[in-house]
Structure formats: structure tokens, C-alpha cells
Image (cartoon, rainbow, N blue to C red; front, side):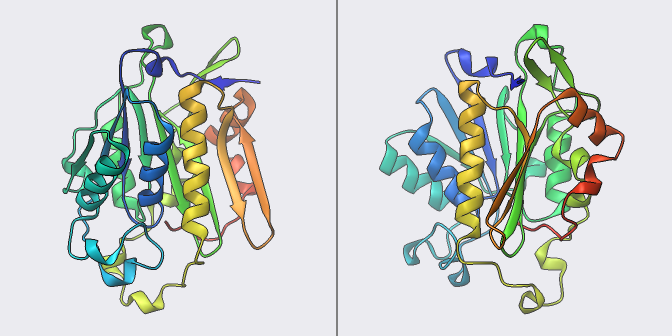
Length: 261
């Protein structure tokens, strides 16, 4: 079984950037603070502010109302876990993501995912250079969702039992780039309500993926969860699976329901 390369985690420090601190990202940030070693440098990016409607499903309290989500989370997590947590209150398009390491996308729209892809473009080198990075993207609908893992525009790279490159999430599921930002939709009331726990489920899966990548035991390129059916479907990182993505065949076997954060 192939494992995703984790040599970025072998040095004195490495970087993890969480883009989007809302429904899923807020719980992801806390989970990473709990599990990751101190040498993991955490950055939170989100330019939205905490609203009252966020308090039911997101990792915020009434004391956070009006604060930028990234600011409120970074300050609280830094205090609770006694570790530095950096934050940015601008869109990811204005960010310079620090690599090597992980970029964890927990956004709810296509333009933000395009900006993440642009940030990573051209960074994945030949594996001999030893600083492969990964983009982990989480998205969900009402009671279902997916986690996608990749890092490049193009074909995968496998050597022996190591995986150094996979098509990035937007290549694996191009439809995630088509989702319009919520602000451009007519009325939030027209958007199907999400389940009360789907964001926490997605966050737990995302943190598990990140932890496995860091420790060198991640063998997945995709995970699909359906809480109505009670199923979790993995797609393993193999040359065959990656090749099917490139040829456009793999998309046919997955649910066609629209995906949101």
C-alpha cells in the first residue's frame, strides 16, 4: 500500500495553514492544536466575522460575536493550548502560504479554492528535493461530504511504496470550483440546512487525514462520508486511481450531489 510522502515533517518545523475557519475549519483548527507537535506552525486564514447564526454549528461562543473568525480562534486556541497560532483576516488570494507542509481548505466556494490552487502552483518539486506539500480539501452538503488530498496540476508520482504527488482536489472533483460564494446567492434561507453535526464529522475526518500525513501513514487520496447511509468510503492513493482521475473516469462512480462546506 502506498503512503503519502511526509518528509516535510522531519525537520525542526513545518507549516499547516487552515483556510476557512467556519463550520468545519474552526473544529479542524482546534483538533490540530490538540494533536500536532509544537514544531507544527499553525496559520488560520478567514476574513469573515462571527455572527449570531454561527453559534449553533461553528466553534464560537457569544463572546466572539463581531470578531474576525480567524482572530477569535487564534487567540482562544493560543491561550488554551499554550502555543503560537498565527492568523490573517484577509482572503486567501492576498495570503502567501508558508510551505512546505499542509494547506487545509475548509472553504465553501469555488473562487477561494481557485486561490488556494494558485498559491500552490509550481511548488511541488521532484521528490528527490524532499519538500513535498499537500492540499487537503474538505467539503460537505446536508449530511454528507468528502475529503480530497492532492498537490499538483498533472500526473501522480509514485516511487517504491511512496506517493509524492497526486492531482490536486480541484482536478479530482472539478465541480468544487463552480460553487458560487454564499454572498452572491439570493437568500441564505434558500440554501438547504446542514445537519447539526456534519461539520464536526468532517472536521474529525480532516484532522485524521492531517495526522496520518504528518506521521507517514496516510494511504488515502479521497474519503466520502454519508451520514444518512452510515458509510465511509475511502479511495486509496494508487497509480490506477490517480490515472483514472486524470482521464476523467473516476468522477462517474461518486455521488453527484452538490458539495458545500
